Amino acid sequence: MRTNFILLLFSMSLLSYAQLKPVDYNDESQKLSGFSAIPKKSVNNNAGILILPAWMGIDKNSKEVAQKLQDLGYFAFVADIYGVDKRPTNAKEAGQNAGYYKKNISEYHKRIQLALDQLIKQGANPDKIVVIGYCFGGTGAIEAARTNMKVQGVVSFHGGLGRDETREIVEIKPKVLVLHGADDFYVPKEEVEAFQNEMRKANADWQMNYYSNAVHAFTHKDAGSDNSKGAAYNEKADKRSWIAFMDFLKEVL
Image 1 (cartoon, rainbow, N blue to C red):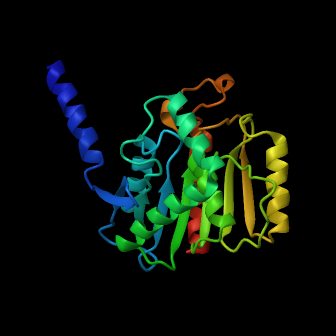
Image 2 (image 1 turned 30 degrees about the vertical axis):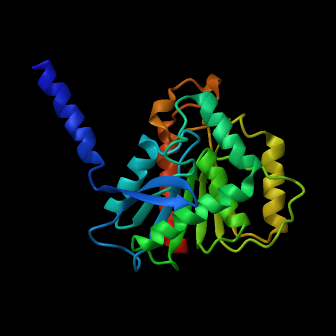
């Protein structure tokens, strides 16, 4: 009886992502493989959402988000930033991988653009796209705005906001929404202030929502519940940030 129950749960888990389609693509010799979600009935003239995962790469959270967006009628694509043979297996490797792309930011930009191209190839309207990201992916979403990729808006869920201060600040055209844990000590106050000043200098249309008692990774159910560790799930912040995201989509798409 117990074995049958476990098999049922496993089958349900596989079924929950059955509508996501693996998509192989390349950055020169590096093989990448993301996930595409194509809605049965699209909304807003084939609007699309590019999803940039957290530092562990394509994970349960990013797939769940793609499925939810597909169910709502959006085209969605989960980007593979690292490559099929370079996905981290632990936090140390994830930190190294994410650190590399933060340092070599133009390479991060290229991987985001390649994933954006795949979203469009899957059927998304190139004039109706929003980029969202979680943690490290949130940093990527902000970078999509900083480089004025052809998108209508970007959303960062508990993402890093820092930038190389030697980089020129240019006018930012995509609308920007930052969803931030009020107690996230991984993103120092100085980094937040510098980001806000950057947005002002860039003449950006930006918003920043703070969520009480929330730290880093507040949307990730597998992050535990201990805020003292710096990363923890917060159900209230998760739900409120999703509502803010939905409102943002209605505004920009």
